[in-house]
Length: 256
Ligand code: ADP
Ligand code: NI
Image (tube, rainbow, N blue to C red; front, side):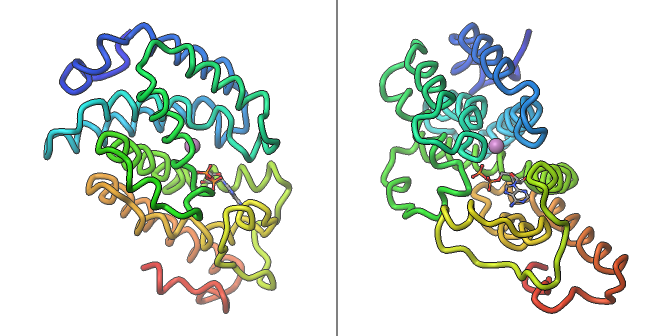
C-alpha cells in the first residue's frame, strides 16, 4: 500500500519508515473508528491527505527543513487520539496510550519530542496560550506545525467544516441558533472549551477566524474558498429564518 507520493521529500523521509507508518495507521484507525464523526478516523485521513498536499506544494517553492515531513505526517496521524474534548481528565487512558505509542517508535528522542510538540500546539484551544514557546523551536518543528495546523484547520472550514460543527453541536445537544446568546471573544482556552453556546456561535468564535490565521500560502488559498462557503451558508440561514441581514450581534462584514 502506497501511503505517500513517489517523490521527495516523501521518498527520502517516509520510505525508510514505511512499516512504522503502516502500523501507526493501524493503531489510529483502531482507536478512532467509530469516534464522534467530526473527530474520527475519517477526519484523520483527511488531515493526513491535506498535510501531504501542503507539504508537496510548499516543497515546490522552498526546500523544506530536514525532518519536517516526517514530523508533520506523524502529527497528522496522532493529533486527535487523545483530544481533550473527549478525554478531559489529565493523564487519561487515551493520553497514556498515545504517549506509550510514541515512546516505542524507533525514532530519535528529538523526533519523538517534536511529535508531542505538534500534538499540543496544533490544537485551537491551546492557541490561546502564549505562543513564544513555538517560535523558539527549530525550523523543522515550526515548518511541520504550520503545515499541520493549516491542514487540521482546513477541515474545520467548507462543507466538511459545516458538517463537523453541526455534528458536534448535535453530539452535545446544542441549539442551532439563539439570537439572545451572542458570540463571545474568549480570552482563554478553558473558557473557549467550557462554552455551551449554540452551534452558530462557534462560526464567529472560531471558524470564521481561521482564514486569517493560516500559515502557508497554499493553506490560505484553500481556506479562502471554504471561508466564503461558510459566509454563504450563514447568510442563507438567516434569510430562511426571516432576516434580510444577519441579526444584531451576528454581523458578518468584518469576516468578508
Ligand atoms: P482543537 O481540537 O484544535 O482544539 P476545537 O476543539 O476548537 O479544536 O475544534 C475542532 C472541531 O470540533 C471544530 O472545528 C468543530 O468542528 C468542532 N467543535 C469544537 N467546538 C465546537 C462547538 N462549540 N460547536 C460546534 N463545533 C465545535
Ligand atoms: Ni483534528
